[in-house]
Image (cartoon, rainbow, N blue to C red; front, side, top):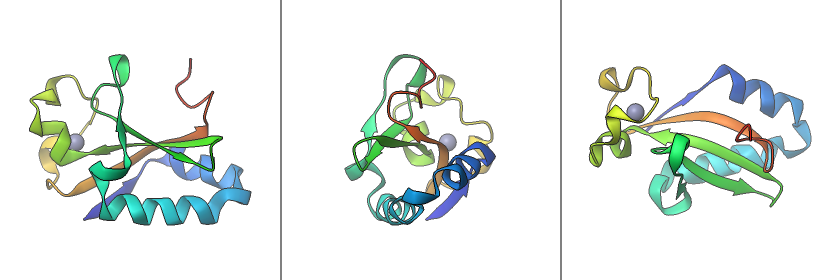
Length: 103
Ligand SMILES: [Zn+2]
């Protein structure tokens, strides 16, 4: 499994350094069970998965095997998906639960 981290994700984790350890642990767990831990999102976020951290934070990621599996690749904003292995995780967003979606 290859894990890629978007710049925004890395910077958000830096900002919330109190939960850095929990984020690292969760990332490791997601890498082992990418579909078991994530909840598939809908609407504009179709194809993305979310996973809560300590109730108030959330991680949003893409799993390239899933991007393509359901024919979702036309909807999923996974920029270079075609160049990636199936076993690629992209950690896109980390933030407070109620703000991460930008709603
Ligand atoms: Zn992808």
